[in-house]
Amino acid sequence: MRKKIALFLALLLSLNMLGGCGKEDTPEPTDGAEELKTNYRFEQCGLAYRLPKEWLQRDNVNLIPVTFVDVAGAIYAKIEYDYTPNENMDELNNIDSQTPVEELMIPIFTLLVIRDENVDSQAMKDELALFKNCEELPAQEGFHFYYLTDYIGSTPKFSEDSAKMFDTLKSELPSLRQTVETFPPDESTVQAQVAEDKEHLNFMSTTLKGDPITSTVFYDYDLTVINFWASYCYPDINELTTLQTFYEQLKQKYTNINFVQVVIDTPGEEAEKVVEQAYQEAGVTFTTIVPDQNMASWIIDNLNGLPTTIFVDNTGKPFSTKIEGVQDLDYYMETTQSMLEKIKTGE
Image (cartoon, rainbow, N blue to C red; front, side, top):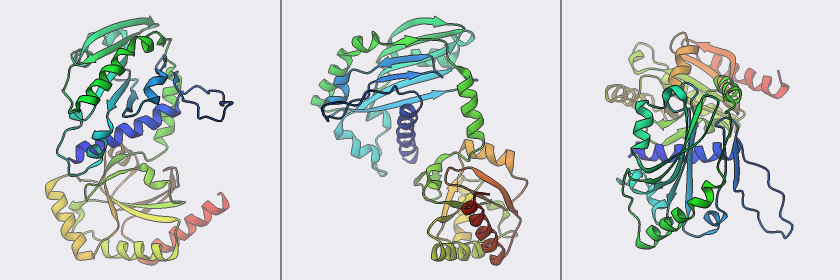
């Protein structure tokens, strides 16, 4: 179930990414009405299209875009729009639901961008197997483009009215297809984004309790203190009581500083049992993050040992200052206060 919720969270984040990386500006409406944004152009993908305005005007239509660009992947880029009716939205957000995501929504269409050398890759074959119709769009300088419709990968749980609405959306796909354009992808923008991302601690994972958490947790604070630890450090290297007191004092003294811990060898049943025992002994109440692949890569590249404590700003960008090894409460408080002063003075 946690995987389902995490997937839905990923889809919502993808929606934000999609809206921010290439939406064309639309003139402000003159009649005071809100103008629907339907035109999209993505330089990274080499794709432009216009959504049918009717899709955004109808009731009972929730569009969830999924998009990514992977310069080294078998699939260079993918843009997919999924449909889910109002009746399924609560269950998508219900952490106790046992219904798989694929039974709650279904792709309306998918656009793929594939390098010439990956056209016959297994990843491409797997994507094609999920759709009844595949149209190849005009190729561009080493890239092939595909427009996929009529998804056959799963059967969603829709009411009769919602199934009819989905059929209506499908009937309007030809008008969307007429707007699709291809052009050479701008890989330089992707590389620039990758370089920028490496400067930030980005993740999309869960807490140790199983709740979804992402790097947006940094946005609400001027400064976040992150302690990296592992279950295999316990009991020889254990400063949890100090860190819990540190966390409590931060809450009392500051509203713009947060503290979290990352246990680097989770998830894992044995590791979680050890951490649970250690946390109970220390009375831990701060948030603990299970690292995802992005964070795990960052840890490998940036940490020399455990425990290590770092500081990040409200964009998730780490400062160069690190606290390595076990320290006392005064040292943690003094270093944190010093970091906050640097932020205030812009150093």
